[in-house]
Image (cartoon, rainbow, N blue to C red):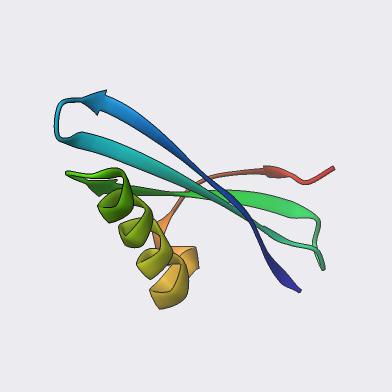
Length: 67
């Protein structure tokens, strides 16, 4: 089962925001991360959320065992 875990937002510089969306697949116990980008915190979060809903496997940047 696919599970949304959280979104963390960071400011890299003025007008340069990153959102890190964490999600997991509980069937295989793996955790993944997708990065979103934007000029505001909301735009970065929206970008990550769209990638998650569009093609989460394609946009995934990292993975690890989910404990």
